[in-house]
Amino acid sequence: MANTIGYHFVKSAYGSWLPGDARGHWSTAWDEQIGFCEPHQLHEGDPVRLRMAKERMKHPPTRFTVAMIEAIAMAVEECANQSDWRIAAATIEPTHMHLLLTATHLDIDSTAKWIAQRTTKRIHSTTCFTGPVWSEGKWIEFIDDVSHWENLRQYIERHNLRKGLPAQPWDWITPQ
Image (cartoon, rainbow, N blue to C red; front, side):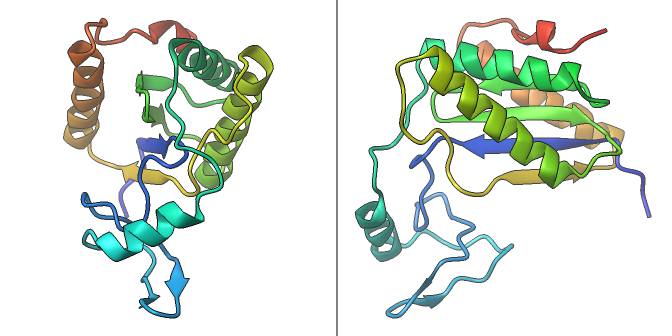
């Protein structure tokens, strides 16, 4: 078994990637008319499921403002400073965030939940936004290959470059 060298953690803003999305979805939702959607499997877009998901939303979709993005970055920095993992690359978009984390002895699912909770608290305490911050679920990819790690790092950095930012605008998050 290969050793994990890190994780690609992706979290979507509330309402930004619903079950039925044309890009595909990972929903485990069950519905009497449609049936059960298998977990851990990418499903094709489904306009009926998308309509149903939109009808169930209790709040409008969340889009991160500059202040919210800064709050997320600050909370992630605090989490990194209190942990054995470090951030090799990060991008915080208006609809989602990507973090490339080094390996940790901690449970990565619990770590991801902790990051989501801390970022939510920071947004609610430092901005006027009071709605839901993140969608349910997350994407965590275990990385055990250096070339895969490097490809993900470059992929995340390209997000920042497309926004006119430096490749590592959050380099201050990673303590030395």
